[in-house]
Length: 296
Image 1 (cartoon, one colour):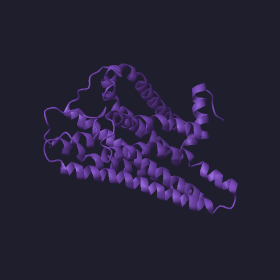
Image 2 (cartoon, rainbow, N blue to C red):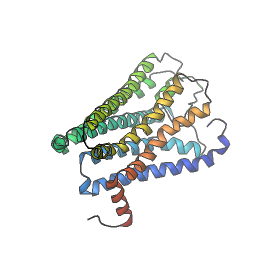
Image 3 (spheres, helix red, strand yellow):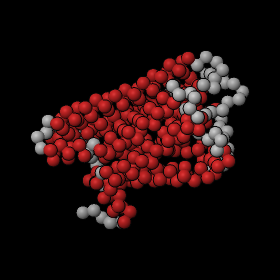
Image 4 (cartoon, rainbow, N blue to C red):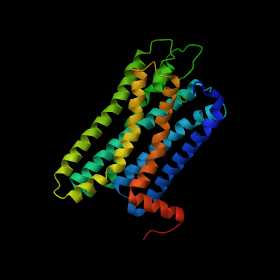
């Protein structure tokens, strides 16, 4: 963090705490969903995919964050940097895809509840998860190879605490036009996910407004609260960081670094908290596991 190098050890305390809570929280959700037969439903399987992507995102950035803030060792090899940006972007795109899947899951549950279970069978849920995970990582697979083909200046200093595609390609001395175009395409795919989520919620609102009972309307909308929070937590830092990178070059480098760290730290940290607080089935079973009680 520019200007705060002397305080890196102290900054490492909240950062390490956030990583610990994020990893433990997501692993707890995965454990509870796996061990509770009553949670073996499409909605919770998609939630487990979200927890898996959050865990992967945390573990991808953890090594360099700890090296910088805890051990004051900011150096990273080119190969390790390319590998890290592949996994960070891969899990980011996968999380975006999972949020999209979850929005359609909520639409289907509200719009056609009687056919919900027959449409989203266990096999279809597994197929959807496999297809979107492959799509996510295949989309970012060219990133390490295109970056490796570039020539870099002797002094290469990244502006973030971890490796990002748009940050690494700016260090190149050779033509990086291909990386710029493909990076824009990757970002566009994530924005398409966001737009489709917006469309799904427009359809959800249209369906809910068609329900006669106000009580049933509120009940239907309450099932979407956790997912809406997860969407805001995930996309708001991405949009903010994109605006900073593209339009606000005069903004303080420290603010730029803080926003990039928020992008990776906050969603994995907050998603388990949001789902435990807002989803009664998850909250009750997590408390029961912690207290070693059996849910009847």
